[in-house]
Image 1 (cartoon, one colour):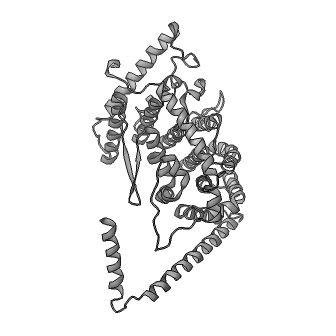
Image 2 (tube, one colour):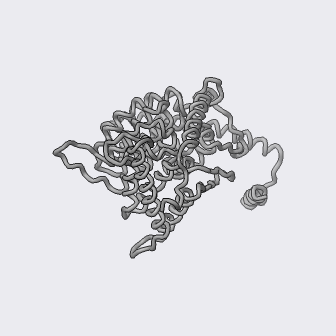
Image 3 (cartoon, helix red, strand yellow):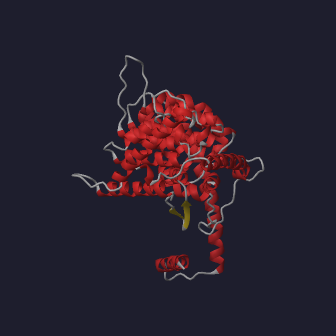
Amino acid sequence: MGKRSSKKKNVTMLDSDDAASVSSSSSTMRSENMVFSNVEELQVDKDSLLDQYLDALFEKRGSTREKALASIIEAFNNSLQHEFVENKFATLLHQCLNSIKKGSAKEIALASRVIGLLALTIGPGEKAQEILEESLSPISEALKSRSEPSKISSLLECLAIITFIGGEEPEETEKSMQIMWQVAHPKLGPNVAAAKPLPAMITMVVSAWSFLLTTMDGWALNPKSWQESISYFSSLLDKEDRSLRIAAGEALALIFEIGSLEKFSAEAKGSSDISTDGENGQRQLVYIQGLRTKVLNQMRNLSVEAGGKGSAKKDLNNQRNTFRDILEFLEDGYVPETSVKIGGELLNTTTWAQLIQQLNFLKHFLGGGFVKHMQENLFLHDVFGFSPKKKLLSGVEHRMSGGEKRMYKSPNSVLNKARTQLLNKQRMLSQGKNTGYYAVGSSYE
């Protein structure tokens, strides 16, 4: 009903603009032909502009490159640039990597976003793997300089996105997770004091790390790398920054959901004994239960925290609601079901992994381009099991270009390969959950 009334309203508005005009079938046909022609011309203009922006990345002036990168981001957010990406992939990637190696903090942040959007547009496959392989070292080096929080955040987001799409093996994903972890836990040497990371920087580390954890089978992780991470996340719950608290709480919820708590906790630093057999195993179980109890009590307090002086009501309510949802999950096993409206249709999430993938990361990364990508990006349709209805824009049906057909429709397309990869990951996660821990009952209190 809403759609019909909307159409009627549009017709009325058009009529009111020119009350003296009378529509005819011939004028309608002419206007439709003009629309088709305009769409084709518009596509040519877009490709021409993108070529100009790409050429501008070779300019010596940094401000010129920054403007070009910002324009490329806008173009990639407004529509999926399959033809341009297919033809200019290598050139765009290498110019963006040059910007990360030599550019200003602003240029690095912009180039990082372009690389992430490039990977999302391409989808899984050989090119996505190339992006990850070529970008890993420059991004890792750029992260060592913590001069600008916005630059670090963009680099972390980029690393998470390109690993999410291009990382086919658990070792590749875990390597990126370790690079992220070092940003929050810098190691500069025995006699060198590391600068304390800002709360916003740690928040992005936790969010990016959690995003990649959603793609992993918890039992495939190396226990020596992540022991005591639960204790670290627990310590973050006591920090003053609410965004940091929420990110840590969601990371803990995710660890509980994938059912590999023992991988992320250890009684003593350096311990690798996660067995439940014998005296050491029993001591480990007692330690884990005590840690669960501590985390549960922290979250319970945060879910009812009173607002102090100068406290933003919106941030406080967001914190309370988040930790109430996490508590309900930890105590009763109920995962918050969320819905996001995409062009009149609902995208639903039913797990913490989906919630973190969708609302807390991809939506933040894509910003204004989130709706467009969710409507047209077939890889994201597979990730979320989302199938939007095809809509007509200006009366013109979207026609797949040759690049889109090769990318998504052929039997050997990157999308078909991505489906296999995604199903394998989901199967591994499901097997891990069936043997893991879900709820923390009141008996541990």
